[in-house]
Image 1 (cartoon, rainbow, N blue to C red):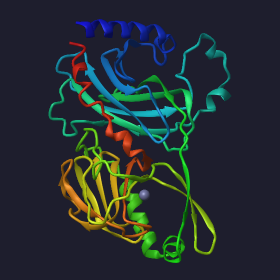
Image 2: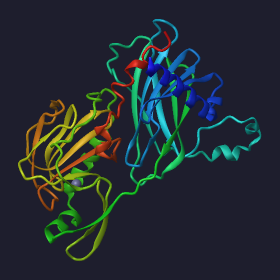
Image 3: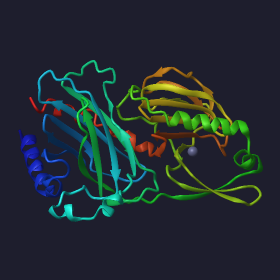
Image 4: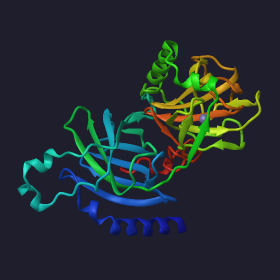
Length: 374
Ligand SMILES: [Zn+2]
């Protein structure tokens, strides 16, 4: 009961504060009826759009290198009416659009100066085979930010959708991109490693093309696991942080800028490496630059990557559970000492692996929000 009171207060507080967007954003029938903080920093927004209701769970602020995940429950007010929805989310470095009286007088040139989104992503069904899908559909998407994306205290997410082939509609959510500084480091390379990086090699080029193709694949049916991740080998020493700006110094003295996409753990060769979450093994093979390498698909466009391994313990096509042994660590490929390089990509963007150790997909907390309309 105490909790209920808290929620009621929170709802009131946020509704009062949220005047800007509560007044309204897009098409006339949008009604934001409730905005509340359901857990630290996690918001739940209920939007009434005529015959459909949307409950969106999301984190109000993230830093570059993290992801705005949106979990969306869509309900039809008509019993037994099936929902077939196509929806996308776009992150903008601008406040939510407010419909002003004076706007109709503004010239067209203003409108043509459309701001490009920082990123965009399609929603996918959490139940991709739509077994439990009557007049409720539950969807998820993530908007990943590069570490060099700009901070913005007045950012917004625009959700655009069509349901059952009806006219496209949208609503917006205000969010904050907090500033974040990433560390810098310089790495000296011996002549063998210098050659490995800088020498043109058609096989290396082909391997890089294959890798990029895998990481750019977004299969809406690839929903395997939404639980928080675990570290692939326990709480070991981190030797290189995520997002470091790197300067490689080659043996001939030349310098090349680079960027550290993952987390490095200094561990002895032969340490067991486990899957950070459940998924499908989409790569388990030798690569020139990264040595023995494993990639696991967890959600549409979401991959975990493991490099410089000494031995593979899984095969391409395997379905693995969180904690399953997938490889032994090593020092293969471009590596200056035994370590595991662990990297997470979403829609090809490198994002901070530690971000996924939290309840990033709002697994347990959004459960209570179901069937709000009935
Ligand atoms: Zn690394």
